[in-house]
Length: 105
Image (cartoon, rainbow, N blue to C red; front, top):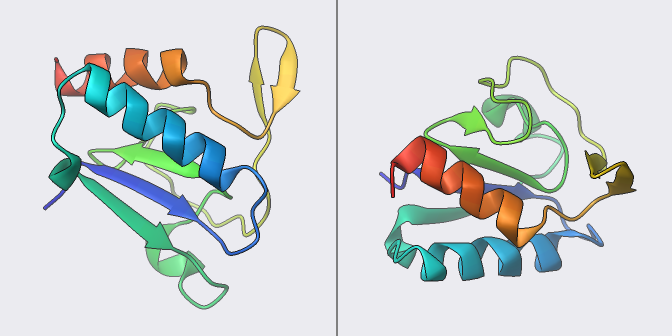
């Protein structure tokens, strides 16, 4: 089973950029792409994954932004804050840091 999950919903304006940042970070850390599972979430499947919003990255089931296992459902666009700026895109360097932390690579 893949240790990294990328969850998003159709039409998310930040999904593609975040997914590219994730793939680039994985490549730079020599993490095989078969460790990545991309999951399209719709309203009916959101509760199955305790979806936190689009886009979300989980590593071994842990949300990389909250450092917690999701325990609620939020079917919405997700907004993050990095360096006092709000964005819907998770930066590559942040993703790399979390991959290194959770996967020890």
